Image 1 (cartoon, rainbow, N blue to C red):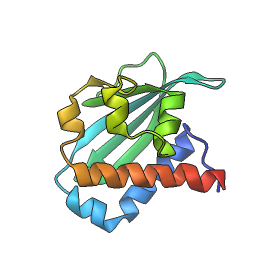
Image 2: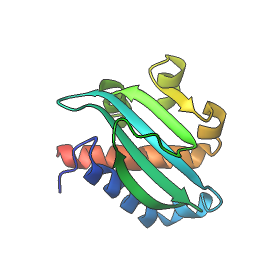
Image 3: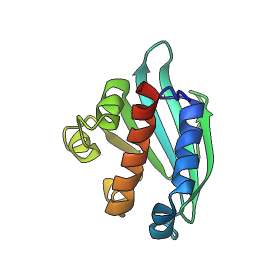
Image 4: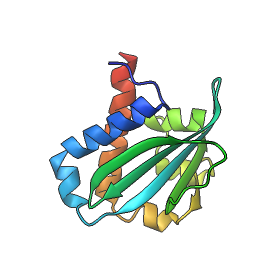
Length: 136
């Protein structure tokens, strides 16, 4: 199946794959956050906002937010579409994107985002595989 980034289907597939990765769920079992990912300058759509609710390492919700609605997200990440694609294709790491000011943390903190480096890496890998699998 093809999952176009960024779309509701892509976000739901990310949730599904996260929940199916038993190791990631185990090392994240005490992780509970509401995370909003903002992707700006997408072709044809402008700003896209994806919302993920993670409870004890399980992704319980993935949805797209309206552009004008505020969210209860405790972490909000923002980058333009090209930066997200560069990260998902491994041309740019999230850490380098952050230090180059291409990826911004609008709510929460970078320390909080990176508080679980192995889980963060695994999530990054899973997200990149969805995009790569869809391109094949």
